[in-house]
Amino acid sequence: MSRKFVADAWAILALLQGEEPAASQFKRILERAERGDLDLYISVINLGEVYYRIGRVKGEEEARETLGEIRSLPMTVLPATWEFVFAAAALKMRYPISYADALAAAAAEELNAVLVTGDPELERLKGRIEIEKLERR
Image (cartoon, rainbow, N blue to C red; front, side, top):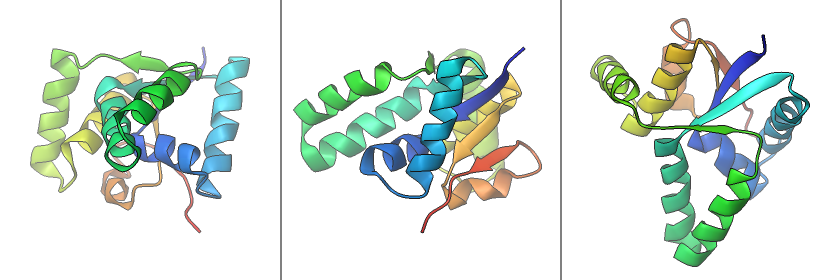
């Protein structure tokens, strides 16, 4: 059985923006997912976060094109199910993190997966979930 990983918006944005060394770290995770060595997931809410952040800076057309590129990556998009939404709300009640971050963390927790992020806000959840930290310069 493959190990499971959940990417958050930070990981995808680091890849798209070429933010090193995080982008290279995440590329290696994608390569492992492509080979079938691990299963990689992202919440549709976190994907929406990537979409709006790109759209805000580069426009909606660029955001749509980028979304198409992201969807070709070896990642399964998780729907915003009742379980994930309220598990995220429970995390948000306990930790000072954004709701989108809480959803990524809840997905990792529910799937017993490693959360892939460079977001320092999510460091607060170490011990509750396993985190693969993407490094900033």
